[in-house]
Amino acid sequence: MRALELTIEDVAFGGKGVARDNGKAVFIPFTIDSERVAARVIRDKKQFAEAEPIRIIESSPERVSPPCPYFGRCGGCSYQHISYEHQLRLKTRQVEQALRRIGKFAQVPMRAIIPSPLQYGYRNRITVHVENGTLGFYRHNAHQLIDIAHCPISGDEVNAALAELRANRPRDGHFALRSTPDARVFRQTNDGVAAALLALVERLVPTGDELLIDAYCGAGFFAKGLLAKFDRITGVDWDRFAIEAAQRDASDKETYVAGDVAVHVAKLLVEADPERTTVIVDPPATGLTPEIRDALFEFTPATLIYISCNPPTLARDLAGLRARYKIESVTPLDMFPQTAEIEVAVHLAAMNPRDTA
Image (cartoon, rainbow, N blue to C red; front, top):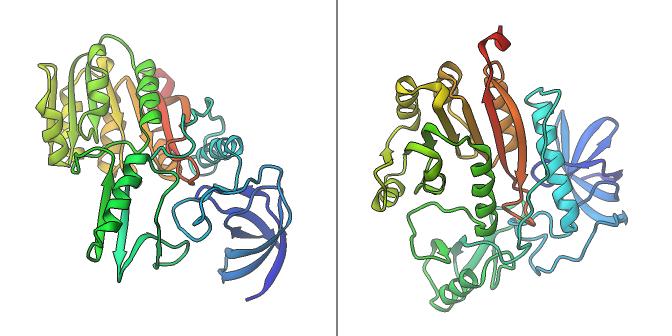
């Protein structure tokens, strides 16, 4: 494949540097904006190309030495070569760009990104794979395992579980390693940023509302943390194990329902007083289903908090709700340092009907 010398103009969501070759975008991993690189094209499409770096010709001052011996081969981390301060700047910019380019929002009320208290050793769970005696993660750009003895972004308990698993010579398969024993309930990956996220949401939601609808509630992370602010709370999730966990210590204020999230949220919104209702949605990376977007659009609760792990689907969903809601703030959180992933909390307020006319 042909080789090029290119200047990296930006770093896109997903972690790859963006250069231009005669106007065509070329995506190059493990590069930083402002760097001059030699790269080899590995895929050449009509609208864009993908390349692998050969060498860095002019290095960015933000380039640092990755502490992980697997970095660049392992597919888990994308940013260990970038200073942490610049990682935060890039992620903030990527969120704003997604809302402007995909959502077509001319003005985005960005707030300062919330950093992780730990840049390494923060993960409370990982999933490793075993195949033909190799135990680890999949390689960058290949469905092939790389053997991993220690993961620097994982916590001590997780790495201890990894060492124990390796010592037991497990059969082929997939293994979830956690710092806590509850294997069936979803938990945010980074405890420090999860606590900051809950504190942020607590500041954003009003006091004295009648009802909180917590959609995709899991085991009730937001619902239980916000009990004091609402008369009653209903959490909805498709995962019955998570709902069972939420119900174990539920107060009289709390109701948890397992089943189709769209169906239950729509029913709750029909019966609720929209002026005294707050909705939190924390969907998977695919974003909201059309049915949930339609219900939020039609019944318009006074306050909507959207938690997203995928800025492009977030931008799509917010664009679909723009006629009913005003974006009050957009706050990125670095739930996943050293990786290209981003968490975002968006505060939306229902617009006065006169404003939508």
